[in-house]
Amino acid sequence: MVLTVQGDYKMKRALSHRFFRKKSNLILFSVILLFTLVRILIQMKIPPITFAGGGVDEHVFVMQATEFIKGNWFGNYNSSTLVKNPTYSFFYILIYKFAISYSLALISLYIFAIVLLLIALAPIIKNKYYRTFAYLFLLYSPVMMDKKFGLRLYRDALLTPLVFLVLGSVIGLFLYRNKSKWISLLWSISAGISYLTFYYLREDSIWLKPFFYVALIITLLFVLFSKFNIKAKLIHITILLIPILIFQGGTSLLSYQNLKHYGIYAVNDHTQTSFGNVITDLVSIDDGTSQTYIWVHESALRQAMEVSPTLKKLEEQFDSFYIPNSTLTTKIDSESQAEIFSGKIVWLLRLAVERAGLGYKQEILVNGETVKGGKATNDFYTAVHKELTEAFKVGQLKKRSAGIAVSQSAPTKTIASILENVIPKMLYTAKETIMYTEYYVDNGISQVSGSVDAVREIETLINTPLNYPIGSAQSAHNRPVTAMIRRINSIMSIYKYSSILVTILSMSGFAYAVISMFRKAYEDKFFAISVISLGLFLSYIILLLGVSWAYSWVSGETMNRLYFYSSGTIPVLQLIYILCGYSFIEMTLNLIKKLKIK
Image (cartoon, rainbow, N blue to C red; front, side):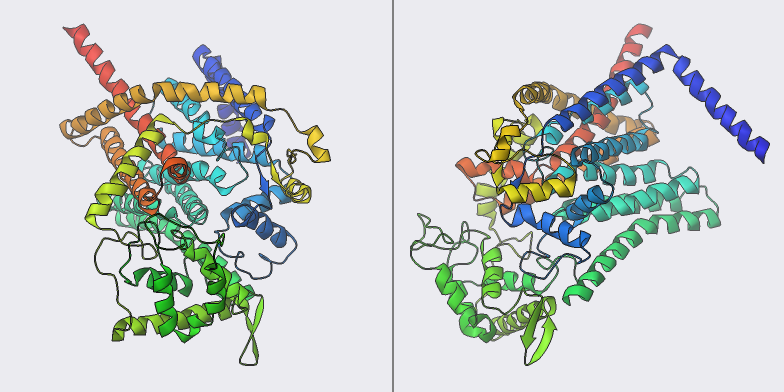
């Protein structure tokens, strides 16, 4: 046994020496190392942007992480406690526990995700020079150097790394299906963990769900029709169930903890409780108004309160929202009065319940009995939903029937509205994502908002020095970023100027892969490139549709919402470019060979 271990060690050492003795390998390794160090330096040189204490979106993750570290799970229950998914909070917690700098942790995770993805693609992309190019292409992706994503203290900083981890894991599970069961097991565990963390990063993560499950099904079919014996097939089928078990197990664990602390079995009380049913009910009320800009008009809300005694308990709070010159309502030219704009009703309903003392407290007194706040809040919404459902049933409320829905909690749209508003937004967003139009960095990243105390709290949590609000005494020590901004924008300009050419070459490569797949009897390489690229493109369309549907009302300055919420398309597009770009190179080399023969 000792001799075997020593022999294996000597063999690995010999192979390592042989690898570096090749001049080309040494050059590639040096290039990769140099560009990796430069990329890490870029990430470390710019302090992450923070809007410290600046509202729910920014501070809820700090609050969750801080309370968890204190041993209080996510803290006392209120309207913010479970409104956001917790992956980013756990990222903060890990950074704090291991005393790692936030910037270093983020770029390290991203590099790991790229490496895992390229290892997954190795069975079809075997050229070491192209793999090196792919690594560098992803390493300097504009989305991870942008002001709103890679350089901001917000959950979207993790979106691109987690997308690559999910895609790399399920692709690896397929491409390595004929290898050792232990290799498949590693890919399977990676797929489960990465999908769980991705899914609970944002509330709109459903767009990658079809790719994830279809990839597992396709891999299952290939295993069933493989040359494995029955025992081996059963083992591989069991391995394919592991990602689903990890996801369901993680969901159950998080839900149980919330049940234990708040009395509510859900990861997110925004999307997984009766609150979502009430929003669906309110959006569904047909009061004869248009929902282009206003999801729930005051007239619909008043109708709902008339038939729901439980909802009517919030009348005083909603009356305060509709007072003249209220900052919570907006006057639209097409409307006769100020209304709660778009989906803002979602947040104001929660605020009304909290202000009325009917929910969103750690404990609530109900009928003389102390009840956990999460349970009491969900019971309130369950009662409202039951009353509104009955009102629809007996005809006290009229339900909107025309239109197409992509989400139960968002208004339906007619074909005319889709053609007029959604499709143009999809095309606009597609152009923006392909050409990286909105991706840049400006001096605004040094303009920190919020309080000094909040900035200091975040610094302690993430082990990273931050810039302070201008005008504070601490801002005198803010790090200058102007020179690094110029370098980042110069790098981004390369992606922008080459975007059209890259897209055209990728389209040519995809066409060649599809043709070659049929000509070569579904050869693994071209089949994989074709099917994976098609699946990625469909995921891209799903996300574009979802974003354009939700924000079909935007115009002018608000168009940047399309850029912000579509950032998940960038890693998907770039993976398509890598796969189809490799196919294009294969096509070019084959043409050169044919020309030489002639």
